[in-house]
Amino acid sequence: MLFSKVLLAYDGSDASNKALLKAAELVKASPSSQLEVVTAFDFPRIFMGEGLAPIPASVNKEYYDLAEQTTDEVKKRLAEQGVDAKVELIQGSPAEVILDYANENGFDVIVIGSRGLGGIREFVLGSVSHNVVQHARIPVLVVK
Image 1 (cartoon, rainbow, N blue to C red):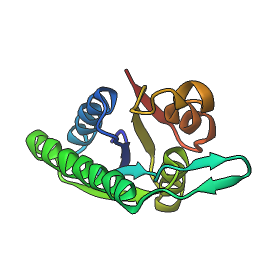
Image 2 (cartoon, rainbow, N blue to C red):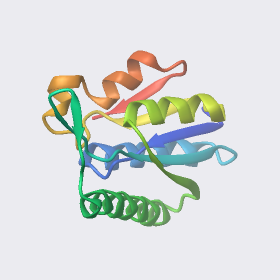
Image 3 (cartoon, one colour):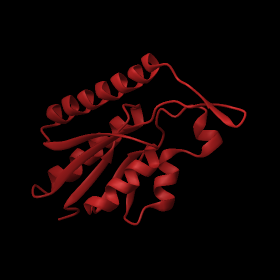
């Protein structure tokens, strides 16, 4: 048995789709293993000086709807792979959400794509995968 509990971090990017295939491969290699998928999303924030500018509710709804579409997509892709998995949609900073979920639920490994949908933030703040690798207490498989 390679891993008994596998956590896949999924955001709908090409790299996370490759990570999904790798996670499916891992759980298929050990039929008694369990796969869970976490999709993290965060509402946008706009800082103006020292204050936080309000974001219209319609924009937040668009972010939430996109996150729900992403979870529906991963469920479909997992079904195509013949893999049963629990899929969670959690609001918060993606790296923190992934790490907290992994710690709270006793996973053996985190599978994550090398580049997500972070855009320019990756260069300013550091990528989600980089933060997960740096702070995880368990092995992290980064898929390119």
